[in-house]
Length: 117
Image (cartoon, rainbow, N blue to C red; front, top):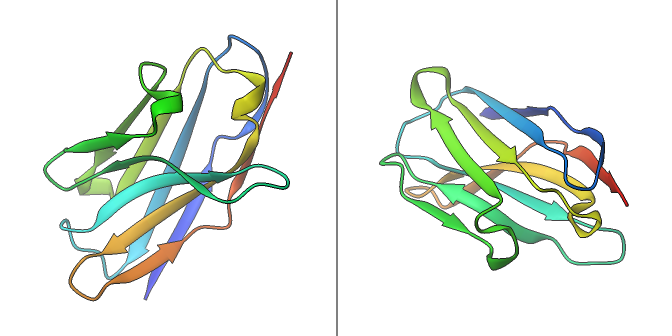
C-alpha cells in the first residue's frame, strides 16, 4: 500500500508563487510515475504535470513555462513550483503516484490553491 500526502497550498495573489510538495510512503519503487492533477469547482480533474523516474516531464499547455515539476527519488517526494500564478489556476491540487506495472493509481487528499486577482 502507498500513502500520498500533499502540502504547500494556500492563498496567493495573481503573479505570485507557491511550491507544492508530495511525499509518498509505503512500498515505493523508483519506476513509479509521479504527478500533479487539479480540479476546479464545476470542472473535471485535469493533468498539470508528470515526471518519470528518469526525469522525463510532461506539462499541460496552460502551465508550460510557469510551473516546474521535480522529484527526489531518495525521499519519494515530488515538487511542483508554480510561478506567475493566475486566478484560473485556483483549484484543489492532487498528487498522483502511478505504478506502471500494476496499473495502479495512488492519490493524495489534495491541497487547495487559491489565486486572487
